[in-house]
Length: 62
Image (cartoon, rainbow, N blue to C red; front, side, top):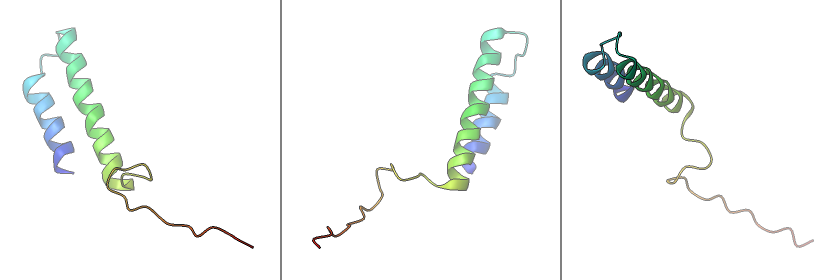
């Protein structure tokens, strides 16, 4: 949550020249990264995360 807020704040602080197309593209990049960070904060990393614990399923021998 804090990283998302920092990303948006840094974007407006460092890429606030809206007339320059390159700076505006970097601002939109920072906003989209903040959206991705908020998505991960809301829903978690998912099943393919590096730190997840493997679930052992016993084989069906019958």
